[in-house]
Length: 361
Ligand SMILES: [Zn+2]
Image 1 (tube, helix red, strand yellow):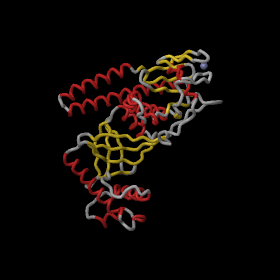
Image 2 (cartoon, rainbow, N blue to C red):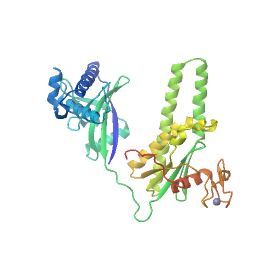
Image 3 (tube, protein in one colour):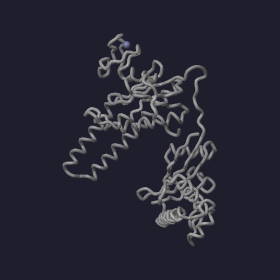
Image 4 (cartoon, rainbow, N blue to C red):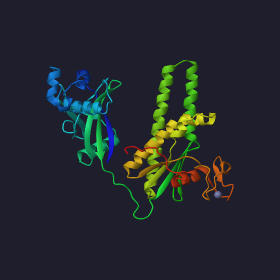
C-alpha cells in the first residue's frame, strides 16, 4: 500500500470564512491541550468536549482530535500542542465534482460548508481516481500557510509490484553527480543527463546574488534563492520522470542508487565542501526518483558508494583507472565512460547494500 498527501488550496475564502477557520484551529488546539491532562482520555467520546467548553466544535473534529491526542500521548511525543489543525475522517470530509470543478465539504462551527478548491492537472488526476474509487481516502487536515488555506488529503492505494517472471530481477543503476547530473544504465543501454546547463544556471543565480549582496538587497536575494530552488525542483521532477520512464521502457524491476547521506555530512576537503553545496539537490533528485519508481511498482535499493567509480568489471580497484569522464582499467585495459561504468557497478552493488531506508518502508 502506498500513501500520498494531496495538498489543495481553497479558492479565495472570504474574510469571514478565514477567521472562522482560525477560530476553529484555536479552539481545537486549546481543547487538545486540555485533553492531554484529562484523566479519562482513554474512554473519551465526542461528548467530552461539553465538559471542556460551551462552544460547538463539530463532533467529527472532536473525534479526530481525541484520536490524535491519544496516539501522541501513547508515544509520549507531545507535552503541549503549539497548534493542532482541525482534521476530518473520510466520512466527514467529501470531495465532489460539479460542472467539471472540484469542491470539498466539511463540518464547521456553524454548519457543513462546501468550498471550491484550486487543483493543478496532476492533482485533478488524483481527484478523478478518488471519485472513481481507485484510491482510498484517509484523514484530511485543514491548515493555513502564509495567509492561504489548504486541505491535505491522505490517499492510499495498491501498486502492482513489477517482478521478474523468472530468474533475477532486471536491475538499473543510477550514478548521480555534477558533470553528469545522472547517468542510468539498464543492461547495455544508458541515458545521460548532462549537468552543464544546470551548472550554468546556478552560477548565474549566484553571481546575480553577489551583485545584489553589495547593494544589500536582502529581500531580493531571498527571492532569488527561492526562485533557484523552485527551478531546481522543477528540473529534478523532469529528470526523475525521464529516468523512471526509461526504466519502464527497458523492463527494469529494481533501481539501485548510491547512498550519498554519508558524503553529505562530511566536509573534509574543499572539493567535498563544493560537493556539499550540490548535495541537497542530489538528495532531492533521489527522493523524486524513488517516489516515482515506487508509484510505478519498481523497487528501490541504496548501495554503499565506496569504490563504485573506481572498480573495473574485472574486479580490479584502482583510483588511477578513472580520469574525469573516462574509465580505463589499469590492469585489463577495459575502456568505458566513467559514469556508465559507475552506474553498472551501482546496479551490481559492488560494495554491498547500504542501510538507508526508503520511503514508506
Ligand atoms: Zn579491469
